[in-house]
Image (cartoon, rainbow, N blue to C red; front, top):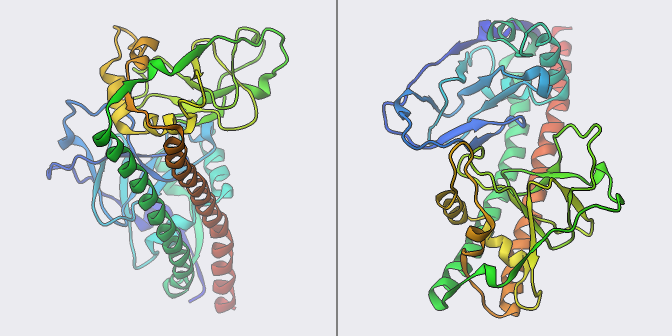
Length: 376
């Protein structure tokens, strides 16, 4: 059969299935083309207006493609459906012409993201409008050839999912230890064990390369702020084993942005952040404390104890009032080691997912070459 040229709009069809089943798993998609639980506040929302996403169904958003230099698209691969905002476009592919996995593989490359960025240039908001997306054309091989390369992709994904399941089991072990401690011993306010730090970059020794922000995944990230002409002297220093958090919680949905610096580097954060550390490392281990901060229970506590009108804030005193079990330092470190192992494996899992994405363009190229040989 060889190769054939397709226009996207000719092989897909929009699906507008609304949530009449009471599904409450709210999801969105990110720039990594992955589904993720929504960070927006979903309380009191009419979820019947949300769109259902089933297995092999796609979710698309053309917004800010030019800004992010990314086509925001993802394929849902799980058996249990979820719901997404009605602002998203949901669609399915004609599987007699193109397999869902192969269609998704087409977009797992920087080349396709640059193509989306190029075509979004004419939009005032740098969006990749739906009709422009539908007009994109690709060469594809016949379905049997697609299937051959999809099988390779599926095998890699299966290996990654198996690794991820082990990751989930490790987290469950960590959570089980914490719950056991809660049952066995009383909880204490962490304010007895932590100390706020106000050390500034007055010497100017640290530079813009040391400035960090904090993600809703509770990790330090490269700052997204425009640092042109900004004086770094008022910025707060965050040395190793110190924490920083953003008191304003109203913009983060159900999450509080807090992170632990586990590196040997000293970071800088905005003076609007709060920086703190354990008073005595022999009484409270930083990694052990971070274990509690990453739990959804802490996020709920922070949101409940956030106050304000235009901007809700979770202040220092409220943080100090949070209670956790504080066993001997050896027990803390043993539990923290499990958490560290979890983080190491989590990072390896992310690298594995990235490797799969990096291999997809090679698989697509192989499928095209095989299609050409059939045509010849």
